[in-house]
Amino acid sequence: MSDSWNLQAYLEQRIGLVDEALDRYLPADDTLPAALHKAMRYSVFAGGKRIRPILLLAACEAVGGTAEHALPAACAMEMIHSYSLIHDDLPAMDDDDFRRGQPTNHRVFGEATAILAGDALLTEAFILLSNPAFCGEHSGEACREVVHIMARNAGSRGMVGGQVVDMESEGKQIDLPTLEYIHTHKTGALILAALEIGAIIGGATAEQRHALCRYGEAIGLAFQVADDILDIVADQTELGKDIGSDAARGKATYPAFLGLDGARQRARELKEIALKALAPFDDGSRPLREIAGFIVERTF
Image (cartoon, rainbow, N blue to C red; front, side, top):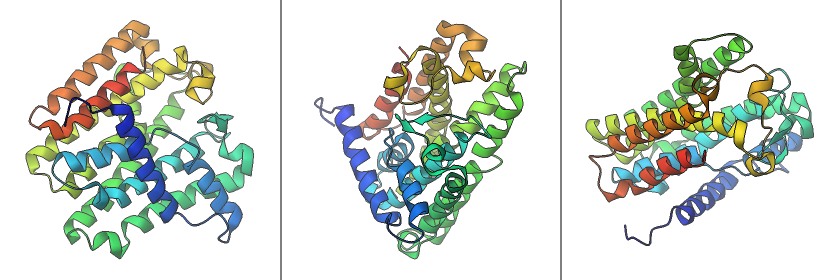
């Protein structure tokens, strides 16, 4: 890649690529039941950085694969992420009014439809991953492994499990290992899955896959440390969601444990771990390197 390479241009191009594919894969909003499909599309297309699908595409390309072959998996990842945000915002959980600068799904469509929209997005992701058109492009073993990793990291051993421990810990004194469990599961699990799935689709060697998983573990935790910091220091209009809500609900965060400076230092350390994991790769891993910096530097 040349020195003229620009991260913002890269992210915008990839967001456009993912959004175009999501529009193709999701049912149209006038398809019955229209209210449900409108609610699904409302949250999926409410904006967002598309970090997880972009990481999946970048991992695939870093090992010599093509983004086109990884797009269905990238879109499935974003559907699962969007479903998790719909449910996370519900009154039974975080009871948030804004997400990505817009009213949350249940504020617009009602709680029942929001719950079902999340359920439908989760199911739609696996419809996409099990589609013969996607599986036909990859070996049966690779396709099965992609589905397994996506399901494992989204479920009770991953994102959902982290959410439960997060809720159980509200208002309680917990230790740092418990906080890391919450973050590595609630947030980090899908980010790790994105890197591992991208590696599989791209045909990574065992060594490449292991390196990308180490990168994913570090950057997944760094992402949540950054979110903890932003919940304190960011402007609500700039961030696009409720701020200060972690402290209001008595959630344990890295700034609460380490202070703001300590949390920022931890984010820097995680970035360095992520970059070190990419040492065996050539310049094709530049997007992954730049994204690591982007995730951490947004806290300053």
